[in-house]
Every structure is written in structure tokens, then in C-alpha cells.
Amino acid sequence: MSIEKIVVLEDDLIVRKNLENQLRQRRYDVASAATIAEAQEFLNRDNFDLLFLDVRLPDGDGTDLLKSLQARPQKPLVVMTTGFGSIESAVECMKNGAFDYLIKPFSAEQIEVVLKKASEFTQLLRVNRFLSQDSEDTGYELLGQSAAMENLRQLVRKVGRTLATVLIQGESGTGKELVARALYRESPRANAPFIRVNCAAIPENLIESEFFGHEKGAFTGAVNKREGRFELAHGGTILLDEISEISPNVQAKLLRVLQERELERVGGTRTIKVDVRVIATTNRNLEQSVQRKEFREDLFFRLNVVPIHVPPLRERKEDVTFLAEEFMRRFGRKHGIRVQGLSESARRALLEHDWPGNVRELQNVIERAVILCGDGGVLEPEDLGLPGMATSVSREWRLRQNRRPRRGRRRFPPRRAALSPRWPKSRSGTSLRCWNTARAIARRPQKCSISAPARCATNCTNTSAAGIEPPTSNAWRTARAFLSPRAVCLPSPTTRGVGERPGGGHSDFRLGFN
Image 1 (cartoon, rainbow, N blue to C red):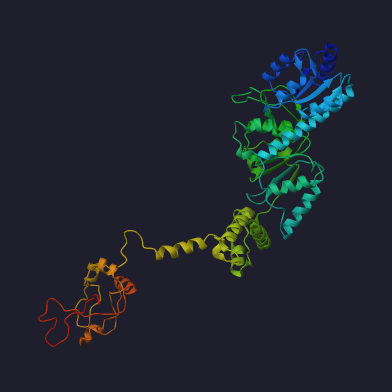
Image 2: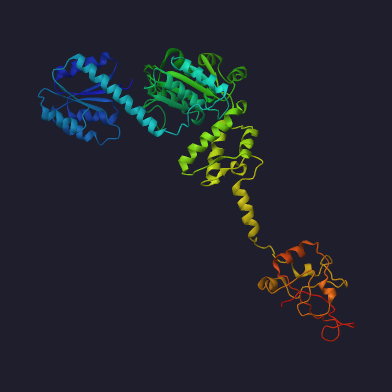
């Protein structure tokens, strides 16, 4: 019931009592007042849905109260009443925010029409407010070319045109909510509200208030009256997503709503009739939950009027490439990226994957691949980022890390590495020693030379120095990677003369700066 509490502000006692009796016969809570001061006390004490306001009152003008009510966050609909009606007065009241304008004396039929219009308008406002707060991208339609999806679409068309309660079961990510929305679009209530409740996302101590609403002061923090989701869905469809997550206490109260189509708000005593179609979804096997005493058996039978099973993606592999291409086109338009298509290796990778996350996982994989592929590219297995495959980001990161020196890591062999037994030796068996430290080599790497085999840059006759055995150590490979290919024979400090040994030539072949 959208309209519950009404204030009648009328200075004429007969008119006030007559209107009050008509409203009470329709089971409304009515508060009557003869002055603006009395009406303001009622309005400050509680939230009312409708106000019958006389234009001329003993302590002021009704239009002044109408203007002051527009600044309130919770304001009632105002119906202006007057015995001195005029076009100018009606236009002024409507400009100031009045919902309707009645001229006394008015009949019971006129009151009935006003109440019906006010109830429909209030319901529309509440549903729009809820949808604006809970709006989200619901995804796409029921896509697929497999026989399983075609059978599912046929079943949805048969069940959708009825008002039967439906229980949709399937794994996470298979598209259970899309099936529920397809049922809603095919139903006779397609133009009525569609209210979705995520039972798994609502705390256990608040789920009863979300379902059935609460009265003002029902618990700590309930400063205003609030309508529940079943009231918002009155005349339409309610989707109970992940119904298996609710507690046994709420299951018992939900069973009464499904059987009797009536409820009571938390902290209230009024019984409210609701007319809703219930669609429930779950990713569990409710029959096993009933056997384990985790779900009420009578509630399961009440929900399982028409069961619908959504098959997982691994059981319809023929839809994988079709869905991937469809997602690729849509995400390409969304992100402004032109993708040429899927490579054959990418198609094979998509078909070999088991898709534990079903269609939702495939959707996220394709969106990431479109973003990483770049404009004008073709989706490759590396772009998909499936388990066991290196992504484009990780490959580029590794290449960049290999080119970038790490802090604290030497890029050149230290001096002790050149003097180690594993350092390459000349044919004469003399160890090749570093003429300077690694720091000096790092400062002038272009001047440091090494070659094998090569002749000495000083054109000496030491042929043994030119014939260096092929290196095998990692330190030698690192030095060869960063040094220029020139070798210089330097005199050994242990020999006589200017680096000469008996027999001619230099005694040792060492690295140096040319």
C-alpha cells in the first residue's frame, strides 16, 4: 500500500469529519487538524504520505504551508481544497507544488480518484528511487548457438507468459539473472516494476528489513518508515538472487509471503497485501541443501514450481568462439579499439580451456584481451592471459627487466673473477688478468678490448696471445658482451726488460685500455 498516513487540514468541522470518515473506511491512518499549527505538529512528529490542505485557514493561508513543505526531504503529496475556486488560485497552487486541486463540496468518487492517482504516483517515485540507487549494467541477452541454449530460450518463452514461480539453478557466471530478466520481458507484467534482491550481499540482521520494510523506530537507526522490496515490486516481479543464502528464520517468513501474499513490516502490526511474481536463483543444489537441513523443504517445494537449469559453458563448447567474437565486437566499440579478429591459436586456446567461471570469465578474458591487443591487431593466446600462458604485459615486463640493470647487481665481471681458476688462459697457460677494476671497465667500456682469436693491437709477435681458447664461463660471456673486440698485450711486471721474456714477445696477455 503506497498511501498509508494522511493528514486532513480543514477548518470546517462538518467537511473535516466527513472526509476523515471516508478515509478511515478505506483503512488509512488519518490525523485531522483545524489550524496550520496543529498540522505542523503532526508533520514534525511523523512522515505522512498525503495532505488535504484548505486554502483559507484561521491562522494563515494554506499556500504558505504548501511552499514551506517543498523544502523538506520527506514531504507528502498535497491536495488543495477550497470553496472559492478560481483558475488563478489553481494555477498558483500547482506552481507551488500541489498534487491536485479540489473544489468543495467534493464527492466520494472524486476522493477515490485522487487516492488512486496519489497511490500510483507514490509507487512510481519509490520504484524509480530504488532503481536509481541499485542500477547496474545487467550484461547481454541469452546468446548461443548450441542446442542447450535453444532449448533454454524455448522454455523461457513458454514459462514467461505465465505468472508461475520459477527457480533458476546453475553455476556462478552462467547467466541466471539474464534468464530471470528474459522471463520478466516475456511476462504480462513487463511494464511493471522488476525488483532485484541480492540475498548474499545483505547482512543477516538487515535482510528481513530489506524484504518486508520497517516502521519508524523499529530498531536503532530506523528514523523513517521504509517500504520493503516486496512492496516496491507490488504488481510486478521480484528476483531473489542467491536464495540459498538466507537464514532459516527469514525462510519461514518468506514462506508465508509466498503462500498468503501478505506481510508485516518490522516493528509494525498492519498486514499488507502484495501481488508479486517471484523468481529465485541459486548456484547450489537445493535438494542436497534440504537433505543437509540447510534449507527448508516446504520453501523449496514452494519455489520449485517451474525449475530451470542453466548449463555451464564447458558443456556447450560450440558457444565459446561465438560468444568470444560477440564480446570482442562489443568491447571494441566500448573502448574504441579496432580488433581484426581471433587467431587460430587463440581459438584453440579458448576451446581447450575448461572455463570454471563460465560466461562471466569469458567476458572478462575477452575484454582484457581487446585492451592489451591494441588498435588494428589480432587477438593472440598471449593476449588472453589464460592459465599456463604468458600475457603480453608479463612478456614486455620481462624484456624491460632484462634490459634494465638491477640495483646492487654487477654488470661486469669483478676483478677476482678474472683471477679465478675458471678464467680463460692463453696457450702458454698464463692466466689472463684484468688490467683495471670492473669500475674502470664500466666507465670506459668502449676502450676496453678483448678478442679471441685476434692479433695484438701493438703488432707484437706474441702469437700465443692471439690464440685464446674459447671461453666457457659466465663471467667471460658477460665481459665479451660489453667489451669491444680489440686485444692489447701488456708487459708483465714479473719479467725483465720492457715486458719481454727470453725468446721474445710479451710474457702475458692482459686486458687493457687502448
